[in-house]
Image 1 (tube, rainbow, N blue to C red):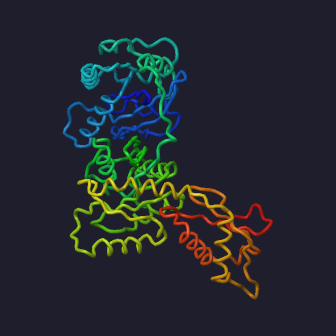
Image 2: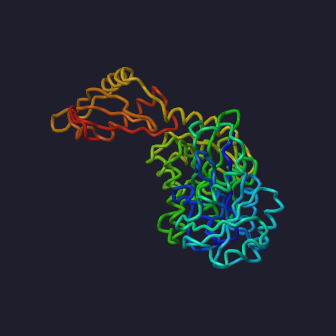
Image 3: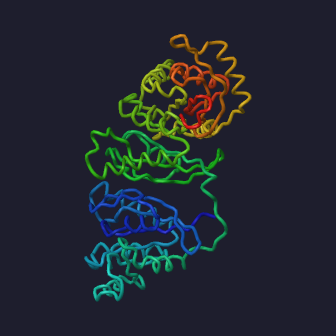
Length: 443
């Protein structure tokens, strides 16, 4: 059974993200004093009284607004409310009950879900101040005085939430899921792809670049397997990242790459490979992740019989450092070829974790060095004694030789190509570590 879900909702700027970060035990949600910073639902795992649960941070609810982003934020909060087992309504002691608080409370009562009322910014422990008792007027039962900043009162708040958790029937571990980070420059269609897969408005889709600021996780299961989809903020050129919030978003995208198993690198078919695309793909390549290049918006490209081959060549030229990554053409908007993505995810995930026995590697090494002699320098020839695989994700090979300085990059690339020719390893980078015989530390 899935973990209980606790959704934190409320109007903007009452401290929802601060409470989320405290319960998650990590700085996952952006915390700034600017209303509207958390736009999408953001999930994290937590635990209370030995019971794992999921906590969801939501964008601030503005009950009536003409602003497009605020409308989206409200819709996302409503989706989180519908999915939640318990809802924590956050209010602010300093501002008291506002008309928006009353509107949100009415909306929550209509949902018929259990609601726990939190009054934030009670930053002094001890007896609640007189203005605290005003919050009984919201008609949601006993309010809980908390300080998301200092942690006061959060235990009592979680005890109240715990009472509404459904009966435990066991749960699935994240290790069963392939973690897939969907990455790319802003406005390339990452959120549209995830929404197409999930069949719901899981993340905000808008043609305003930079709409997705937080990385958002979604569990998904089909006949091909179990996946944890991570939608990331679009990675911009670093020179353009001048807003403090945008810096957080880029950092979070890089963190999403780090914790992923597979990176789906999205490219806009109408623009081709740009400098930003090479930077995004480079982050995944350098992190050693299994990679798939997805050319999105393929439905908008005029085609003939040669278009796909010609476009593939251009992608290969633009991302020359990752010739191993398969290229898929699809449309996130129409769903064209999206189902094929999961076969490729499974294949590159398997290759990224593949192990090759040492005996087979050294047979390959003997043939490769007989075919192309190792390089020489000033009469001294490189001798490679043996090769072994030291790790996976990515497959990492250690070559022991007589002199690491003679092991030119071009010969490393030659050996890498030989390994790929025999064993495939499609969709994954390969790491080569060169060590002199008897040298345990040099990498």
